[in-house]
Length: 588
Image (tube, rainbow, N blue to C red; front, side):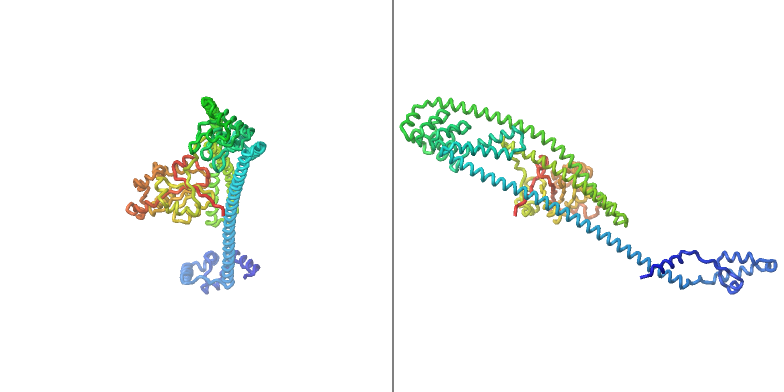
């Protein structure tokens, strides 16, 4: 190492101006070359009348000596100073290099830590979602077990004539519904309580015998009356096609039989063997009652029952329609809010990618103030995290509203949506890449993967695919999109378009159509491949590799577009356009 005081003294010495050398007559005679300034001074001062005759000779002599002489050699001190300066400069360069390497290492460590934190955050969110799903499944399992227990107890109480037990069970069921639906409006809660009560009133055992049928067999009049007043089906068909009236007659319960008969019980319904209730009656009194009964009264009672049922059904349909309209209006507002949150999220992603690109550019150009660009990345990450939380909250509200609407549709007799196929992550290779059974191919649509766990993205990134993040400005440049699309068709790959949790279809449509007219529709309906319209995408600068003769049919048949989204409940237009496949997680 060089001593600092030595270095400073040498540096000062190097920075000092050169000393002026004086030339005397003796040095001139010896042929020493002085600076031009001194030569001119010497000639002017020594010019005298005596020497005026030979100025030319003196000049000629001095000029000839200047041509033949060599520059002075540097002194030992100068050489030593140069050597020291080289060592110092090398030392400073090495120190600067070490500093740059440390900065690079710190940056890479920072990025690695950010990635780890992001991964841990994803894992935590997945664990939370999995825990919520398990809790929901456990709660549903407990609810079903409790419901099964209540139904068993309810049927036993109906047979035994334990009216207070029936009322107690119905009260417990009502309280359970209130707890589950605590956030619903009063009308919705009232309707759900009524529907749940009817579910228990009409409950059946393993042999399809209803609570009223069990009460008729048991013969308790109060229990039979209570069930009829609460809307039990008076002519329910149970085991061996036996009705409540049939079982009351068979058990010899006169009071219960009269109650059922006068409320619309049909004595003309036979069992599987074609036997009437009067033929199995346990007492002559019951036989007499059934034989003397006027069947026209039964017709009138049944007509009244049907009219009442139609009236109740119409009221229910009107309430369902009103509730459905309310939910649909709520969904429209939530969709608008969700779209706004998605736009903010899209801008946040673009801003973060922009800041990362700017930082990388600064590092590549050797700028020292990378702390400024790192701070801008940190600020962009905070904004992105905030936008993600807001978007997730809006998405959850929208999903809950759509789930509520779906429940209303199912309750109203409409079929649930079956357009979404499901598979677990382990089956993804067979379902998507190998397309076992040609399910995706026969659908005539490109696959849309709904995956909130990021497993599908990781899987496809490490396959031979052309992956594009539609929220990265670099990935959606015109040339990048065109080359990715063309390359996927040229080599028979999958073009993977990742939308994350943002609806990017309108943006994707506009960007593709900017590259080529109607490119989006040609790509979606597969006309781009089947009608060879992809040839219009080829440019002269693409080289021979992408000329027409290098595209073969076998590779074009392996080409596919794969859309990936984190949106759990995709819009209707997506499901109509794509073969929708949801990745489901399995509890270990």
